[in-house]
Length: 251
Image 1 (cartoon, rainbow, N blue to C red):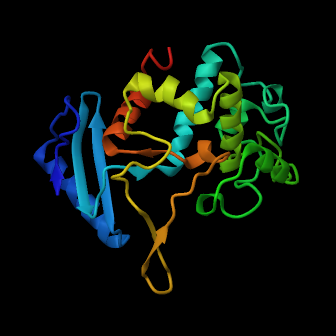
Image 2 (image 1 turned 120 degrees about the horizontal axis):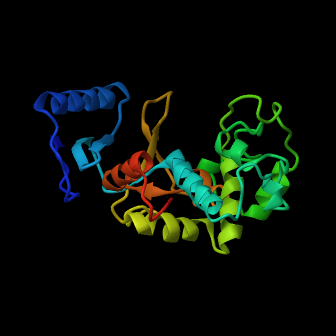
C-alpha cells in the first residue's frame, strides 16, 4: 500500500510517477531483503509527501543509530549555551571517562580512534549496563589508531557524549533529549521505551531463514547510541529540522 500520510496536517503530494517509483523501490526492498514488514516515508519542507507500507507494519519502530543524531543535537545545544566547546576533551566535563583526551568534535565525527563497541557482550542484544560498569570495562581498551587520523564508527563514543549531556543537564540523557529536543519539535511519538503498537524486533537465521525474535533490551549507558523508538511521521519532522533548523532547538 502506498499513500500520502494522514498523520501530518501539512502533507503535500508527489507526482504520480514519483509516487509509483517510490512504491516500486519499497516493494523491491521488501522482496530482496525478505522483510516481514517495512515502512518508508518521503518528506519535504511542507511535510510528508509520501508514505508506503509493505507486509506487517506497526506504529513505532526502534530507530537504532538514528538515536545518535538526537544525542549530537543535545551536545550542540550545550555548545550554544556556552557550557562546552567542541575542542574540549571529554575528560574536561566527564572526569572519569575512558579515552580522556578525545575531543567532543572527534567523538561527534567518529574520528576519535576509539573501538567501535564496548567490551563485553553485544550491547544491542543483551541487558544494558550502567555508566560505572561501562567506564571500567572500557578503560582496558586501547586506541586503534591515532585520534583525528581517520574515520572509524564508534558506538562507544556516543555513550560518552550521552554521559556528557546527562551531567551538564543534571538529569538523565533521555530526559535532556525529551525536554530540550523532542518536546520543542512536537516529537511526542519518539520515546525511550516501545509503545503498545511498536514492532517486535526480528532477525533472520542465516542457516534456516526462519525469523527469530529480538528482545527489546534497555541499553542503559549505551542508550545514547541506539535506544530510541519512533514513527515515520516523527522521523520526517526530525529530518526536516536537520535540513532547515528550528530556533526553538538550535538558534
